[in-house]
Amino acid sequence: MKEVIMKYVVQNAAKYGKPNDKAVMGKIMAEVPELRSKAKEVLELVRQCIAEFESLDDAAKAKLFEKYAKEEKKEAKERGLPELEGAEKGKVVMRFAPNPNGPATMGSARGIVVNSEYVRMYDGKFILRFDDTDPRTKRPMLEAYDWYLEDCEWLDAKPHEVLYASKRIPIYYEHVEKLLEMEKAYPCFCSREEFKKYRDAGVECPHRNTPKEDALDVWQKMLDGVYKEGEVVIRIKTDMQHKDPAIRDWVAFRIIYESHPLVGDAYHVYPTLDFESAIEDHINGITHIIRGKDLIDSERRQRYVYEYFGWEYPITKHWGRVSIHEFGKLSTSTIRKAIEAGEFTGWDDPRLPTLRALRRRGFQPEAIRKFFISLGVGENDVSVSMKNLYAENRKIVDPIANRYFFVWDPVRIRIEGVEPDEVTKEVKLPLNPSRSEAGFRILNGSSEVYISKDDFERFSEGEIIRLKEFCNIRLEDKEKGIFSFVGWGLEGIKKGKNIIHWLPDGETIPCIVLGIERNYKGLAEKNAVKDVGKVVQFERFAFCRIESFDETLKAVYTHP
Image 1 (tube, one colour):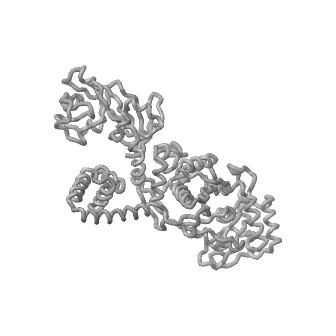
Image 2 (cartoon, helix red, strand yellow):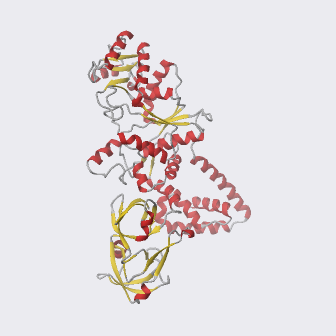
Image 3 (cartoon, one colour):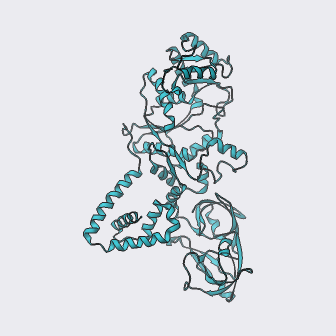
């Protein structure tokens, strides 16, 4: 821990001449968010390290400057993405290819961010391609197409070109017909169970050597609607003794009599994802593909098509899965079922890992980009906490978010022992302590104020509390909620837990905050109404995005 602190002390001193404890604390908390609960102990260590550094002679300081300056440069480089193998400036073409059966999730965001960032690094081309050729088991949502476009633009990843696989079916027909003519593909009438026996045994099925004329005749009958679903499929010839059974003569086309949300009933013979993607990646000139290591088999299957056509396969990088502690394994299909069951209010429910939910909560797109770029593209699975994203977002919103009081589960208390004209004085509170130019907001003091139930219950009779920027009071009668006035200044006040927020009677509006573990009802200061649509900090509560005001202020929890 001391090594980490000293690193930031030295780096801060190198930039500004004299290390600043608050600046160093900010760096530490951003790197290790879980230390926030031990901020007091960490601050003490920071101050010790600063004192130790300042006691050194110039030669010793120079050595530390050299050591940590190099480390800072190395870390900065590591925070970016590694170079792409074989990439040439101006010639890189990459794609993000979602199935729009729901909105973009955090997993989708990683693909959007990393692919678009590489394209930016190499002045290349970024393609958004909807792999939507399964109208049943991966049925697309019509709204999701536009949602993906909105999310890409929001993440500063606007695609240079947008493609819809379902609208390009004739292209795939042309290519499979060529393969049938080349006798590199064939119609198979085996049931799934029958073909599994052949596949597992490494034996060719009876239809594998169908002459091309007969194969093309079957294909035409498939297009004409002669066959039922499951009666016949088109398979790509591979190696029926391949060590991996999943590679053996895989399905390229199947019959699905189901209306498609985008193209209706225009087609009923659909390509599988492996076939469609293989053709699209070639005709679109994709130079590099980043895909999950669980899709290695897809590449192995597709390489047969590339070999038959004499094409060069794109350079491929496989990355590990990223799991977010707080969300577990929430798949798109699982989320949809939960929404339909009433467990969530919709795809933008703040408790969900969708980009729509994160936008609603007030996360900044720059924070999401930095978060995913920092995870890199390694093959190892990565397990991270939302606290890391909170830290990135906090760096952006903390300097700009206005501060307001929100009293959840309010308790009304009475202050006795002070003249009415004194207690009703104006109380000036900074809108943002780090930006003096932001100015102040005004609350009028009152002998009757609201404080949070959480605060009220933890104080004992006789204990002195300070109402922030207002006055000091002593709890006299807990049962009746009576406090006595003690004074105006900070003398004798314990910093931290004994300085609390409050709201005066008569200057409040009802407020509800949609949270993650629970919703919070209470009162907010009227001043907050002017920040509808913005992220604010409800002091001693959390950062929140104020969503609307219609007699009640409605806010959505962002993060601590």
